[in-house]
Image 1: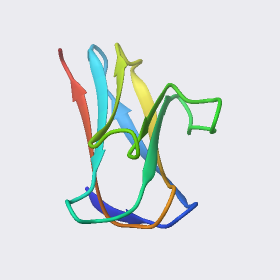
Image 2: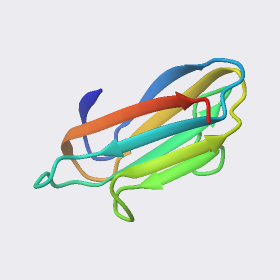
Image 3: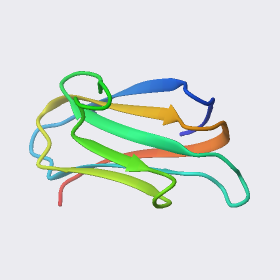
Length: 100
């Protein structure tokens, strides 16, 4: 999915995690030449509550792509929150639920 995010805004996405999966992986990146920084938070069961109630955090100022992985995720809902540190016009977000 491609989206944009404004400074200090937060967008939450809900993800269904089937039983028996080995990894929930969220990958976020932006095209070369696009300025801006963002953070990604992932939590199972309910929406992330930053800074404490998260299971995984990735920060675009540290690495791109920003990747969050949860090993042996619980069946049910997981929530991905993207927070704009600065404005980002174009942001690509990919969520994979993997069998290995």
